[in-house]
Length: 194
Image 1 (cartoon, helix red, strand yellow):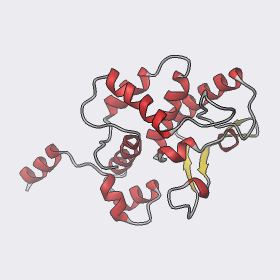
Image 2 (cartoon, helix red, strand yellow):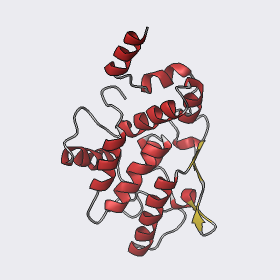
Image 3 (cartoon, rainbow, N blue to C red):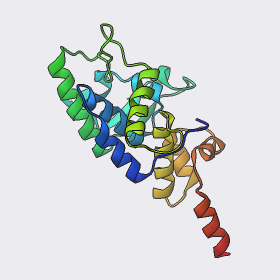
């Protein structure tokens, strides 16, 4: 978590437009689901088709099972944002054309092996390539997606730390505070306002 930063709205737009190639729709879906759900990369990569596609359609809420969560204490369910839902629908259509799928098929499937998710290292490479292509400054890793989500929720909730904590699935508000970035310009404006 330390060292990486959240992405701005403009950077998110640039990034989502940069994924291309055979797996561009997969990479875009991974990125948007990360930015719009706040799931950790390990949680995103644990998703299987049965977690997101039920009764012939995409689910409205995505649940990551307890065994795939950080402390393995409880599962977490998040509303599927329309942008993430659209990107996921596009990828699943492509995935089902590429191979025969079952509810156990990994959503973010690797080209390697029978049914394996891409690795966290590969997810970092995918994201890093988009960052490099767009010449974005600073450190941006896979955790930047979660930090971006935290910052967006915090600002959309009128800086409500408790709501942000709930959206992040944190047990303690101190954990949530570590995710929030405070720009020097914002602090300078506060000082000038007193």
